[in-house]
Length: 234
Image (cartoon, rainbow, N blue to C red; front, side):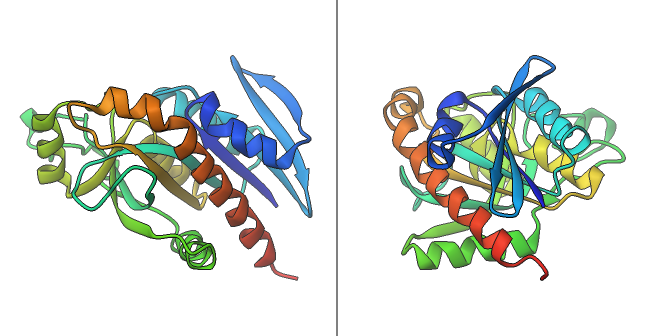
């Protein structure tokens, strides 16, 4: 079994690498992939760099170069709805691209012809994630996550994303990873730790809580990998 784990920023993967301790660094296409031998698996960890294009490159590389059979995206996101506070865990059951707009041609916002408006996460991986949350005595919420190449710090934009997509959180990579995995038929799971409230104070909140939020996500993904390996066929 080969499992790929992606974060957008160095800060989002360093706590995870610290948990595994030993790894090999492999440079491909301007990025570094960290290969870990763990139990009966190979784990490939990378920070893609921020944005949908970079995340798609990393996900594609993990599938084609490293032959990853499952992909997990772990990191931070901005909460869009009341009830999500800094440090909360969020499981994306579906993802969309809020910044895609070809409505002038009669298409729904977020939709690309021959693509999908919403990409659904793997139900088995999501079920495992919820089990882990219970075992760790953590609260985890599920919902639609909207991705776009914008750091959202404007209430009007926030409100429009909620209205258009019924999204509960916003970030800059998840939907592109979901799109890649969907096209290659690779099961994926994307979860986030809330680092800011995606409002006018988002930039200040993000800087203050990035480190703690990333640690929450790293601990959770570490447990998820163990759960995946425990459930492999004998």
